[in-house]
Each structure stands twice: as C-alpha cells, then as structure tokens.
Length: 385
Image (cartoon, rainbow, N blue to C red):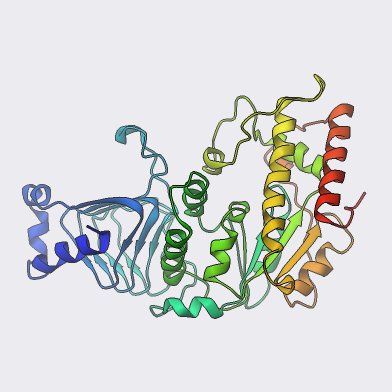
C-alpha cells in the first residue's frame, strides 16, 4: 500500500468527526496510522488527524491545501538502523505546501519550511520556522521543466557559500546555500543502489513542486548535488551548472581544519554521515597523513563526477571557474546573466576559531602532482598560482 493510498483511507472516514474527539487520549491511541518510507509525501488536500505519525527518510512533504490536525507527528530521520529512542530527528527536512494548515498540538521540527500562504500553529516555544518565498498556488510539476535556475557546485570549502550570499543580496534574486537537507538521503541511497533514477526524479519533483523559488532568478549551492546531477537535469533540463574549484592544497588545508576524514571525525554535520569514502588508500610516503590522502581523493572524486556530467549536456549550460582566479567574479556573473558580482573573501575557519592546518612539503608536492594530473585529464585551464 502506498503512502498516498494510506492517507486517503485514513482521511475518508474521519472528516465528519468533531475536533473535540481528538482530545480523547484513548481514541488517539486507538486510531493511529503510521507511514514510514523514503520521502513521505502527504497528498494535496489530504486530511490527517488523530495521532498519525509520518517518518520520512529523506523528509516529509505536506501537499498543497492539506490539513494536519492535533496529535499528529511529522518527523524525519536519517538513521533508521538506530533504535527509535536514540534516533536523531532532523530539522529543516519537513516542507509544508502552500495553503496547507498545521494545527496546534502537532509535533513538528524546528526549521520546518513554511511557504507563504501556509498556516502553522505550534504550542512549542522556541521553534524557529523558516518562511521562505514559495509558489502561492500548487504548481504543476511540468512547470519545473521550463525553469532556469543556476546550481553552484563544488566540494565544499570552495567558495560557493560566499557566492550564494553575494547573489542573495541582489534585488529580485533568491540564493540558498545547502537549502535542501533531504538531498543527503537521496544522494546516499543512490550511491548504495537503494533508489532508481526514476524514483529520485519523482521525489525531487514532488519536493521542488511544493517548495521552490517563484522566479527564475535563483541560485542554489550545495556540495551534495555532485552525484545527483543527472536527476537534477531531468527535473530542470534548462538549468545552468556552475562548478567552483578551489586549488587542491588550499582545499585540503581548509577541509582538514574542519575535521573532514580525520580519525576522530565528530560527525557534527549530517553530510559527514553520507560523505563518500574511499575503500582504501595507501599513503605513498610516511610524511603524508592519511587524512590528507583521503581529502585529495575526495577533491578528485567530486570534481571529477561533476566534470563527467558536464560532458553529457549542452556546454552552454555549464561553466568552470577556479576560486581565487582574476576572472572568478566576472565569469560567474556573466554565467548568471549579471552585469557584475562582488563576492567578498570568506574565512569561515577563522570565524569558527579553528586551528590552522599546515601541510608539510611532501603533502604540498603530492597535492600539486594530483592537481596537475587532474587538470590534464579533464583538459582544464591552470588555477591561480
């Protein structure tokens, strides 16, 4: 039985019951529906009530005009292998459709997306609900195919966050950095072969059909797009893709300071649970730390996957620029059809008071050799010195 069928069966016999019935705890426990699936989607105009629980690995989407009454739970987890009491429910993975209504007494996570026109009442204090712009009406999915958003791609620690901030400051433009947390689960499940491309495309269409910018002046930056680009391109065949590459040694130093691929990686960010990992790497020298080798592999893996994707689509829809090059701002602006774009330098490592990671001579040489081979293999221009 599909989630949508379950919702229809749940909704039909309950519409006539008065609201006061939901105050009876025994009845709430007795009339209880539970949907647990990848990317749970509540159908448009559905009626959910009486303690229904929806757990979405990859998030929960409440359709246009749907009503979620008191006693329901909307929650999203990324680790269903853990015991329920130790499972971490993630904020920002629940999307409410336009004109939907979530009543008081509904358990909903902080960071839930509430589009304009959506109605949410919560009895819980301290919840910070995001209220970004969204389509005021339920948009036909076909409309997504004519949109022309720009997707800024990279490895992380590559400057796309600063670019998004610069674009978002412009009139009429919307720019988001890591704005779609549910990409984590889709990318990870694709890598493990748990979802087909058609299934991923359907989930993306439902999400972006419910929540996306109302204009074509949109930039989305996220390192987690890297292995989902064929699916993104099917949803947005007219989209543009901008790859920002940071010189390898500078990327390694920055990412290492963040703790990526360290032996004691704290996994304080959900992406750390799903970041691709090399099967095994033997350092060519005892002077090269394993963490450095893993980061060199990651830089090659992610940038290589993006460049391989670029070879299969219209070159007018792609652009590659090196962070720190003299043409970084000019080339990025032209690709977005902007007259100019000022992207101020960003040093988030310093802001977070992270210890500087210094590469040794052997490690710098290893990065230089790997980057040179990568440039030749993909026929790229040389980065700034």
